[in-house]
Length: 273
Ligand SMILES: CC(C)(COP(=O)(O)OP(=O)(O)OC[C@H]1O[C@@H](n2cnc3c(N)ncnc32)[C@H](O)[C@@H]1OP(=O)(O)O)[C@@H](O)C(=O)NCCC(=O)NCCS
Image 1 (tube, rainbow, N blue to C red):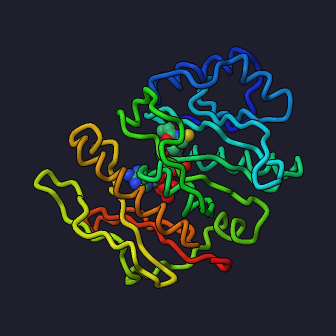
Image 2: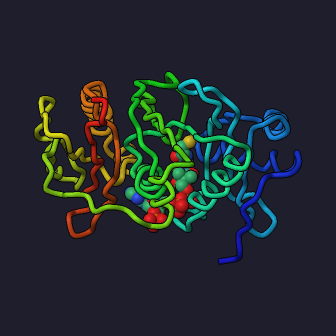
């Protein structure tokens, strides 16, 4: 694998290279090169991963207000499919954090699909972000290759980049998650090998709870779309119920081959809850 450089993108040619990446990843163009150029110039950030002189991934973030604070709102992050799972997403987030801290910012925020377990692994367990907000159908119906026609529900990530919690996570310190905590949903495998919910409990009061999600949502959306739609609506009920009751998403247990690739969010009742 050739060496990769992580840095701010510099010119229109590099911003233009982000356009076909967006089309390949989402099937549509979200942010064009001109807007990227002005965002970079006037307080936002466009971070790139460069492999052999070409952009292989990027983050696009603009200045925004969130909970009364000036933050970077990271509207897009993408890594070309063939370059995934090599740590580029993580390294771009680290680069972005350093830059934002140097500019006096305390948070970087973004949204992500709670059913994308790769994003959950990166955002929650590796970066140490926490989530207390769920937005159903956040962007309305849009022609995304990832969404495949499902409502675009999102968790809102607040990555509080100056906290001890985040520093500890970035140094690889993560307290073990108690896998015996009560489970909000119990699943079983369908004949085609996809998990489906068998039981959903919306009345649990224990301060720590586990919520299972499928480990391979993209595959399920391609091969079992009605089941994927059910997962969307069922996890919407779960997150809306528990986040409104004072829980927040605090950790994520990535897929374990020993447990049929099952993976779980850890929800904890926050101190004010
Ligand atoms: C999200 C994205 C940018 C991550 O980029 P990346 O370079 O692959 O990220 P990293 O390699 O740093 O981290 C991925 C992690 O997920 C893990 N992972 C891979 N497949 C997984 C799965 N099915 N479930 C859970 N975790 C998984 C990887 O092992 C890695 O964790 P590790 O570092 O502990 O091994 C990339 O997947 C992408 O472009 N996705 C499509 C667009 C998108 O969803 N953008 C974000 C929302 S705007």
